[in-house]
Length: 220
Image 1 (cartoon, helix red, strand yellow):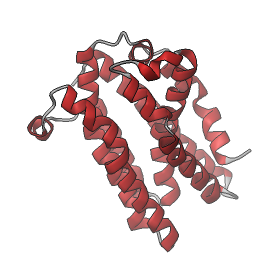
Image 2: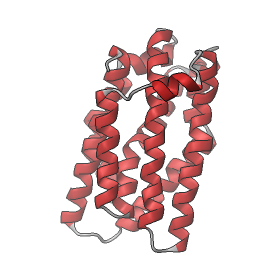
Image 3: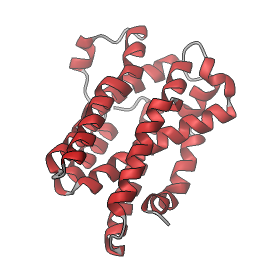
Image 4: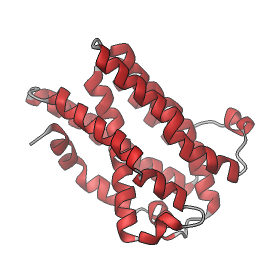
């Protein structure tokens, strides 16, 4: 069993709740109120800046040039790739640069990103990747299952762009790269180390659930 297999087993129950969450279901069937999605988009935009900073810690912590390049790629892909999914929506939703600059992260959002950054500061490349993985991997899973259950979702006039973004080859290629690196760096580590990483993965997966709750309830 690979490390990512063990990580997945530790959060199956948590992740199954994502697919039944009213916010996620609302994107899938197109019924999500626009104001809730607007709130989510602004909070997720703020989240992604810290997400990129966690990847940037990998550049700092890495000693091998190949890993430095990989983490640099992840930073650029987040800022220039995943955030592209958001930028089109930001314009359509009337979210200006000024509004982003004035916005504050919700309590759940700030707590989540602070935890990931803390893991990154105290850990190594593997800790950083595992802290990132719950978001990257679960979004790929959500996109895949959403497209399976609602094949028409990719063509929805508003939410289709979101579904296409997280089911795209580009997004899944990046996610697969993170999975590969976690398994490579985690090969042969001690049971104690596995349990430490599982704790991080479970905590971040719980934060993902809190993020969906925050978006649905529009909670600051």
